[in-house]
Amino acid sequence: MPPKWILASSSPRRIELLRTVITDFEVCSASVEELHTIPEGKQPEFVAQINAQKKAEYVAEKYPNAYVIGADTIVVLGHTMLNKPKNLEEARWMLEQLAGQTHHVITAVCIICRSEHFYREFAVHSPVTFAQLDPDFIEKYLHTIQPLDKAGAYAIQHPLTKTFATFSTEDYTNIMGFPVEAFKQAIVPIAG
Image (cartoon, rainbow, N blue to C red; front, side, top):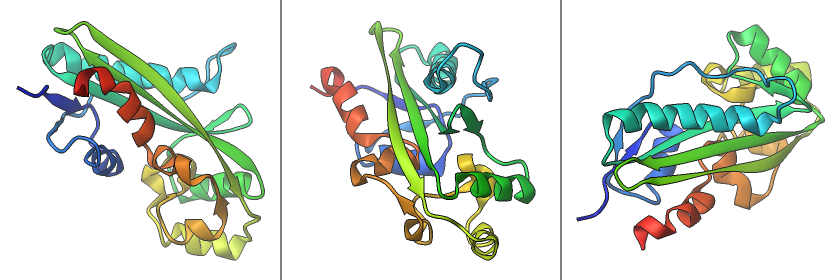
């Protein structure tokens, strides 16, 4: 019997990306308190890892026989985390900060199956460089995508984003919110 998989996230992008690897899985949102700032003395990756762990552990507690996947994606400019913007004003500010700069998208993934004593975690870093963005373009962009549910206020998968963002094609799924290739490697012991 194949293992039961649960994604501890209701993100449409994560669901879509995971489906390219595992066709049969359940979705169970994890109601956890996430970190939104980088603790002093820690690297940005720490935040994504802690959040991914919390999500996976929360769901694994309820489903100890399932392989539970927790994931968290953060956008980091320098040592500043750009979370999901609270409003359009904050989204505008984020795009102004990212314009003409290289930032990093970090996605951490944690996979837990309590009954099988399986625990694996990893994080993938992807650099993204934005061209300069003028205020009129930023306004157009903000009203074209839905920025409030996206870390850093942008959607890498939107065609308009591809006009100003430069990144490696291998990093695409990671930037979108779930590093497919790294996940495939992580589950080799399970998938056989």
